[in-house]
Each structure stands twice: as C-alpha cells, then as structure tokens.
Length: 252
Image 1 (tube, one colour):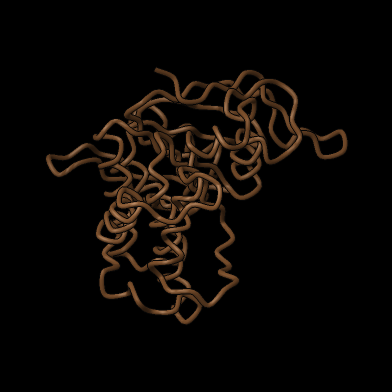
Image 2: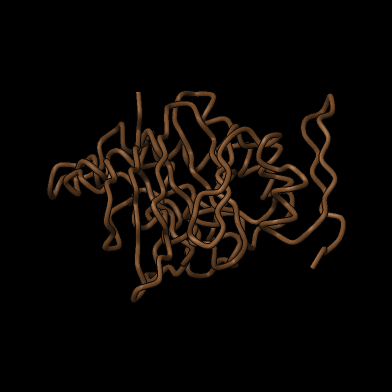
C-alpha cells in the first residue's frame, strides 16, 4: 500500500524551479534516505510533499485534510527550537494530539505511546527534565521521540541526526531502520552517506531540484553518481557487517 505518491511535484522560486517535476511512490516498510548537496532541494521537496509549501503537481499527502494528514505522517523539521519550558515527557506527549478528541486528556493508550517513544530514544532518565534546559543534541532526540509518539505509518525527518554525537546518530538511524522492519516507512534527509548506505533500504539522490537517482544504496552511490553530484571520489563495498561507504577526496 502506497503511503505517499508524488507526481511531477514542482516548486518555483520566482521562475527558477527549486523542485523540478519530482515523481515517486513510498510504500510500507521502506527506510528512505534523501541525499544531495546543500541547495539540492531536499527540504523544499519534503515540505511541498506535506503541503507546507505552494507547489504544482500532485502529492497524495498534501491532498489530505490536515487532521488526516497528521495521522498519516509525522514531520520533524530541521528547526529544533523548543519554545516552552515543559518537561521532556510532556513535550513528547504532544505527539498524541492528532489522535485525541478536541479537549480530551491523555488516555492510557496515549501514555503508553509516549512511554514507548521515550524508551525507544533512550530518554528514560530525561523524563522529568525541562526540555529547554537540554543541549541541542538532546533536544533533537526529544523531538524525534515526539514524532515517534505520533505513531503514524510514515515519518518524515529533515536532517534529524545533525548535531548528534556518533553513538546517537547510529542509534537513531537504527530506530528508523527498525520502524521500516515493523511495517512503517521513514524518509530521512541526511548528509552522512555512510549511515545512509548502512541503514537505508532506498536512496533518493537530488541535484539542482531534480531526482537523479532512486534505488538501493549500491545502485545510487556509484562512483559516477557520487562524483557528478557531490564532487567527491569514494570507496563503497558490501561486507559481512553491511555496506561501507567512505568519501576519499574532492574531485573538483
């Protein structure tokens, strides 16, 4: 079952296409890495797919009424500002709002979803701490947990591992991979091509607003694609421990 379909999705800035006729389908059970250099259009594509930016073409997500969309897709933007000094537990519980009747208090199933998200992100010891007092990386993990508490079949995250230390980058990507194994789907934009190769089942490579490659990491992270899009040479090998991708040198 398709969770999201884009058909010729296009976003213009003036007369310049920032996203240029992108078409794709997202099925259940996919961990999708959205990759490309700065300015390739990754954030704009995600926001337009969610209906957060004016766009031409079609997005099945953007076409949904807002309440239904919030129960279909959880969204974690790049911006990690937490405006109110609430506890970590309360902030994560905000992910349950799309499932609550208007004005209703948290139900047992909402508390269970919140607890599960806290455990999944390893935040048990942070539960009672004030979210605005945490470091940037810690706040990032809390906001990922809030998106997990939303319990949607699709999670869309824009550079969620930026600013995390290596251990938490790996742990977070493992969470996304596990979600795909459980039948959900994740679209995550990221710059670490090594983590993308290891944890994603599919990569979308963008260049200047266009989708230039779409497929398994071994088929997308070819020497030709990596050189043309990123201007680097790289080492890629499939090992018994999983794929290994290592940038080697700048080529231009």
